[in-house]
Amino acid sequence: MDKHKYTYSAAGLLAFLLLLIAVAAPAPALGQDAKAKALAQHVIKNMGGKQGWDNTRFIAWSFKGQYQVWDKKADRFRWEKDSLVAIISTRTKDGKVYVAGKELQTGEEKRRLLEQAYAFWINNSYWLVMPFKLQDPGVTLKYIGEGKTMDGAAADKLEMTFDHVGLTPENKYHLWVDKKTGLITQWTYFKNFHDKKPTFMRRWANYKNYGTIKLASDRSNPESNFVIENIATPKHVPTTVFNSPTPIRKL
Image (tube, rainbow, N blue to C red):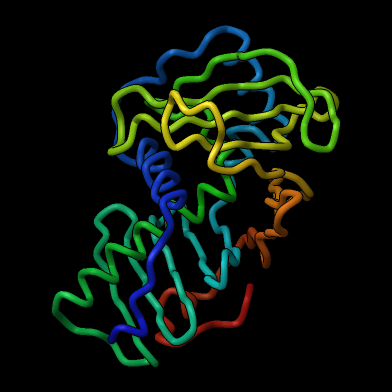
């Protein structure tokens, strides 16, 4: 089964922890200064607002060769890559795993793949919907001044850290909020809070309307191109999507 053992990067693990905050932490949002809070609210409003987010039930997208469909209302997540398919509950992490159309019934391999599918849900969705998570419980936002993006656009900068939540609370992000559009257009990731240089800096660009919300697909930088593809927010999804043991047609 080694050929089916997919892994995720350290940067992916950090996104796992960030979205896990929203899933598990009961505490109220902490440490947001007034300007940072106002900017976060402005960003979310410009992307469709809380109502637009709440009204979006299904989100589908491709991420690094993986295709997934998330049913936010029913807490269901379908993940597939090549012939491997996992369909899980995002609340319980239970579900089904199929390899080449055949279900894995029991065993360590099934448990590991279910855990990994859960991690992919947290990681891959964070790379797509992070701006909607700015005011999640445990997130600390700080306004750190004005700056310019790698493309020369004027922006306000936010620092995002985490207060005693997740397994790596030392992680840190910097976010650029474009002064004209009021949208996040760039982000950087620091593995450790005190790091002087980020692990990566990437665009957060090419916004389009998807139903009642805006999402951006471009995560490129001067060193590499990276686009999140096949983004869709359909109002209705056939029941077969969350039952098919083999890869499905893109929504």
